[in-house]
Image (cartoon, rainbow, N blue to C red; front, side, top):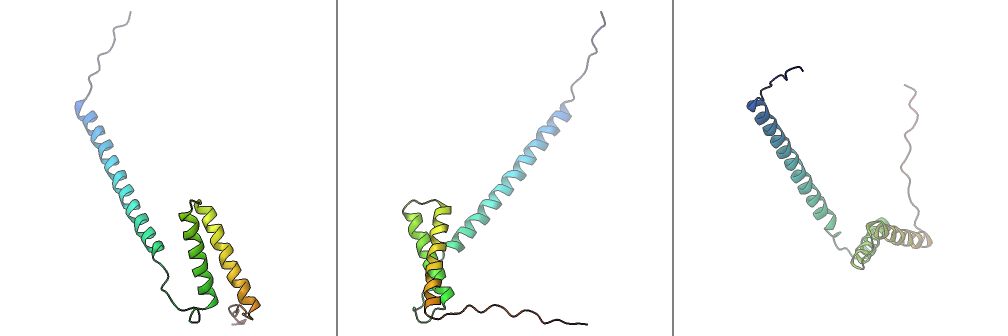
Length: 118
């Protein structure tokens, strides 16, 4: 039989490894907290209502956005999922824009850049 080699465990390396793991966990927690803060700020911005204007002061696009926001918030309060609420908001916006077309509104497309031979 061959005698087994004795190996000594280095305490300093195991301690340094646990310190490394602890530091990595701290960094991960910091990034997670930072991301959660960013998401909370985005949610606050999204929750801010569009400033109230009278119906006559709004453009058709603003009217559509307002209808979409209202439909989405109502759907969420009724318990609809995010996708369903977004779908209902899109439908409301399209309904307003169809009404705009019936009233004679024409969407102006941005002018295409002219050809420059230089």
